[in-house]
Amino acid sequence: MEKLTVIKVGGKIVEEEATLNRLLDDFASIEGYKVLVHGGGRSATKLAARLGIESKMVNGRRITDAETLKVVTMVYGGLVNKNIVAGLQARGVNALGLTGADMDVIRSVKRPVKEVDYGFVGDVEQVNLPFLADLIHKGIVPVMAPLTHDGHGHLLNTNADTIAGETAKALASQFDVTLVFCFEKKGVLRDENDDNSVIPQITPEAFEQYVADGVIQGGMIPKLENAFQALDAGVSEVVITLAAAIGEEGGTHIVKK
Image 1: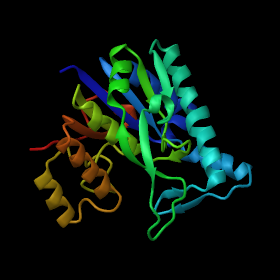
Image 2 (image 1 turned 90 degrees about the vertical axis):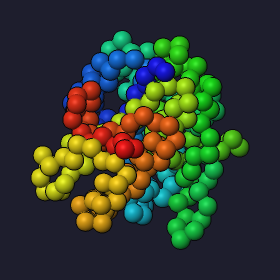
Image 3 (image 1 turned 45 degrees about the vertical axis):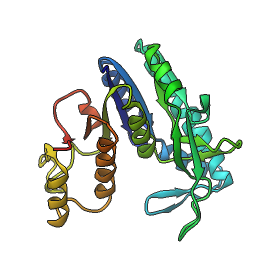
Image 4 (image 1 turned 120 degrees about the horizontal axis):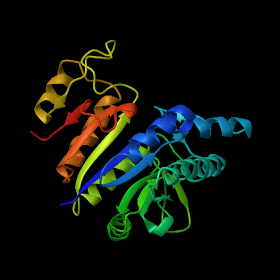
């Protein structure tokens, strides 16, 4: 199987010129087939504030009302996405910016209202594997914004980690996929106050032990649960590392055994 790398980067990295340029250089130098998935939350929050729209967050997740949806569409699908595409084209990478609505590439269902009404937020239902794989085989590099659609004309704000995970899972049937989550730390840390205490490898058994011992806690638990789900769905390897360390040997490698 041909190798394919799916890289997810947070908004913080792609929203600042210096870190964006470093990322684009590193991403451009990755060999073989690749996909980039990006966030953009800080820019969305800033623009919303300038437009007098209040940003509401619950547990770090954005509540997306109708006005907020307009802002995230402009920022994620427009400004941030096209900046990345232009930067990659300048580096000889034939990038194509996509939201889930483009070519029906990712379809979602609006998240049902339970304790919280997240508004226009989508949970991924299907990834259009034939179209995406066809683009990749043609040498095109998809740059995916965190927006999907429901097939009934509505765009939906969708978590970028989820888009990266679901895209990697879908592509794993046709490629040997490595999924890389770029993080503000060098990897999963044994001691959160020591940036050099990176755990180099985590198996399912080790994960359970780290959680039981309180080494891994909070928001890192769902991140790693998603990583193991990706491995179960056929992804070869999941790496959590620093954006500036893409293509290097470091970081935390999540493996099945």
